[in-house]
Image (cartoon, rainbow, N blue to C red; front, side):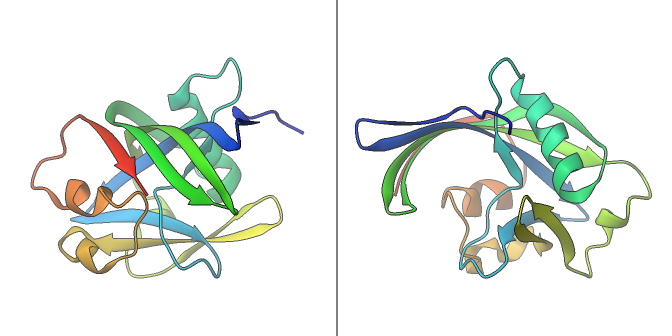
Length: 159
């Protein structure tokens, strides 16, 4: 089993997460565990000694069996949330990414299926203009991903 940077300390779970920002045809790709009530950017926890951009590439290979290109850092996020009945303190590094030309994942008209261990994942493209209607975590992403130009931001997200 791989060891991710996620530790329980002082009644909190602390983790380092890397995520992908895919933008295609004015849509953004989000994912969730089947049955969850909220959506998030695809990605996962960084392994010790692993560059965060490499985490994004690894996660997309594991979850969708897709090779991707990871480029610049868009968001550095200090995310404070309650998940799994525990307060969480997450540092998130969110990178602009892209699929290879011709990838089946570029089809914005359908839901794409993936897996994370035993969990089934669904990946779906959402119009950037409609993100205000999506339950998206962390919440700042609704406005940030809908902005006309994506730009680097440091965000502190409470709740």
